[in-house]
Image 1 (spheres, helix red, strand yellow):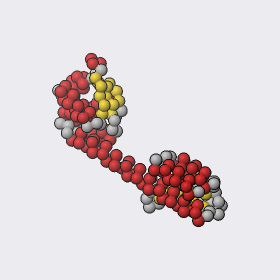
Image 2 (cartoon, rainbow, N blue to C red):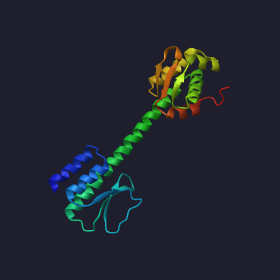
Image 3 (cartoon, rainbow, N blue to C red):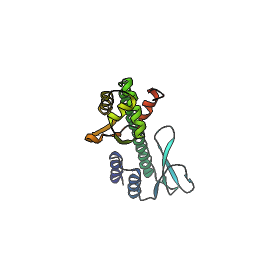
Image 4 (cartoon, rainbow, N blue to C red):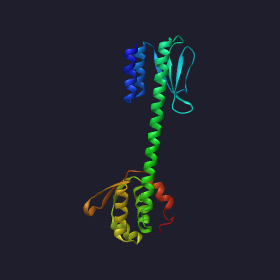
Length: 195
């Protein structure tokens, strides 16, 4: 059994989905095992091993038996511990990525002049924060700002990797907002009335 336990640990290290890890664990131990979120955990006739990714259990490894050998219990507890550590690392990575995205948005927005900020605010409203085609000269004329202000704003946002832009020649420029936090940041710092 212990030689095959390595297969379970390798799946965890390879970041295989939890369901696949549990299926392999069930196969290796020869027991009926499932993953449970804890919301519908029925403890009668089962033995559960909590998967902690913080202070509280995120999930449980549930064995459909109350008779679990000591060897199997060690494997189940270590698997639960490893899955918990992996979940905690995933949460940490996600938080770090969000902070990085927020930092990009803050830097991009703070680098805009007032005319550029007004242009960005207007185009984000036009695009509803997602994507579409804009004509820089129309925005400039509508807002009574220079075309170079619109072009400069778009270039700063593209360089900060918070939008993608593709020229369509005379038809305008296709813009895609790649970081939705841009909409919130611009709303916070832009003038409240455009007209």
